[in-house]
Length: 376
Figure 1 (cartoon, rainbow, N blue to C red):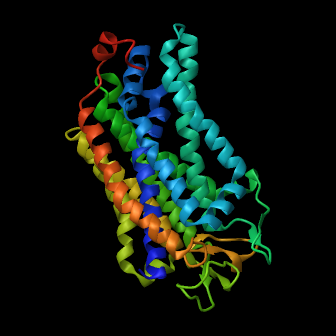
Figure 2: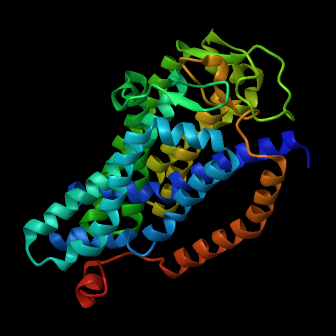
Figure 3: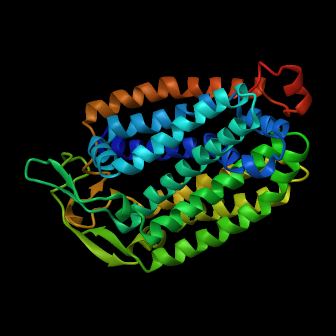
């Protein structure tokens, strides 16, 4: 298969894996964020926790797949992102560690004080990853200061506070909003009684906040300087980010939408998903959850299609920005990885579908009380 085609396939697969992570782990994070607010008593909080209890560990597969795909298919991007965003990644890992500890130990404590502590730990474990992933995406649009020397050794001038610029924080809030929306539709679907009803009341507000913030971000991007490759690029050439020239273009991140009008489907999908989640929340909670899944799908696709072919624009050395054409592994590596994806991804999807089929149905307080030691 042509090297250019393989690079495009892996660009698309990376997007699919990130979307899979946002959809499958997104409602876990959203459930954690909502836990202290939609469940007032201890048994209500156990109902909410057990609504994601059987599946949250399996959902982490998408995080591992996404990280693995970046490492193996796009090694310069892995080096730049994981080195440059080191402190942000460290905070992310700390927050992610809180989740399994909270799930496993929260209900083993008898005292209400420790249970409340772990409730808020699960809240942090949902909020911080959702915020950091959004902030990371926001920084792609403003660029981050990094470059390569003549031996292609990576160097950066990134600090944690430099990542917390206004546009990135807005992107972080958008991420939190759609995670809350996705989590609210899940709790509404799975948790019986008052927690489900309270989560159902959250859905319209979360959808409204997402819609407003997403529109503000779109208007903001219109006035940001985008990036454009100004030299000839060989899509089948070697992976060397120093072999091109790049210029700043006012509103450049909108140029793909002018060239390919069909991709307007992506932002439309995000808005359609939010609207359907609101309309379907009472009569068809499963359909509302599926609709809310379209929100991260549309949001991430909107960002990815805007940035293409850039992965990680450099604000200090624009010519050395990482793109689809200069940040990939070898043709053989991409080919072998594609074979593995064709074999194993359907197995993961089938197993995931089977688990959700087995665990279908609502979680009720009487289920928790009848098997107090077997549930979280």
